[in-house]
Length: 171
Image (cartoon, rainbow, N blue to C red; front, side, top):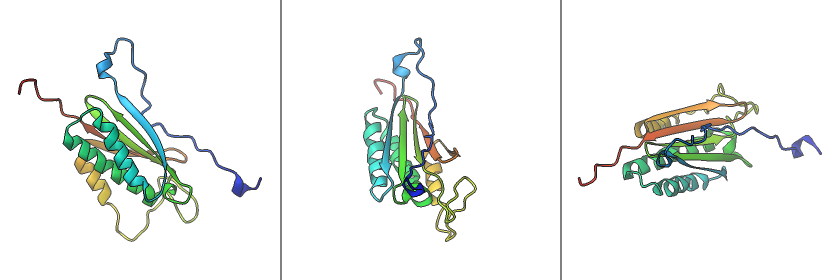
């Protein structure tokens, strides 16, 4: 088998890395989560937006939380397509969603920065046409916290939105 026919395996990053529920922890405090991977093509952003909305609607968060999560997830997916190997032929990105009573966390893992020399990593430069950067401003304006981190071959961008407590009953 030639080198071009071999697939390189990458260790997946786990943006949640959370411990299991303790036996004494009330079930109503538990979180719900899902993981979904998709091909990095033009329909991926729309699919990720739909997945986020569909998943979060089950927990009935306030509409503003739902709208903000959908918008921020769209930005993360768009950035993964534009700036990583996930947006190239054969690319894949993975969506992680976790929702609980107090917060929503969404992460998009991509296959790392694309560069013309084939290298990748956190020090890679993005295209220099100056038409980038507004996505991070959008994410910061509609989320509570956000960030990103790298593994050897994966870039993970994430955000959290604190869910406001429900109004007291009878109001």
